[in-house]
Length: 89
Image (cartoon, rainbow, N blue to C red; front, side):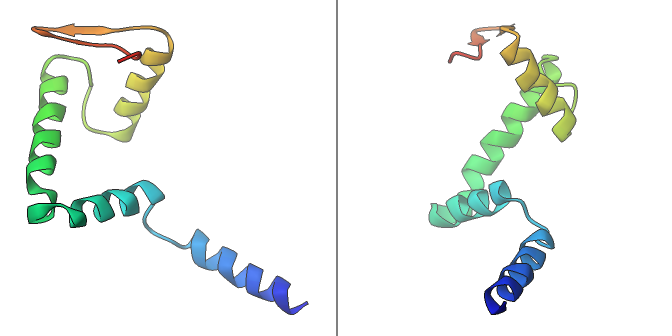
């Protein structure tokens, strides 16, 4: 009976967690880099802005990224200037 109580408490603790595993992993990765990953964060944001400007992403919401991933599964690729983005890359 005692182990079930512990499992119950652990499940409550994890269900109340505010951060998703991706955010925890991303913070860990940034913390291992010099300057806490400032350059990577900047490049990521610049690339996101580029994708929005080119119409590949509608905006920076999770729903927009989900729609992009869905379009990859349908075999769609995006040609933007000198770059070609496809699911298989």
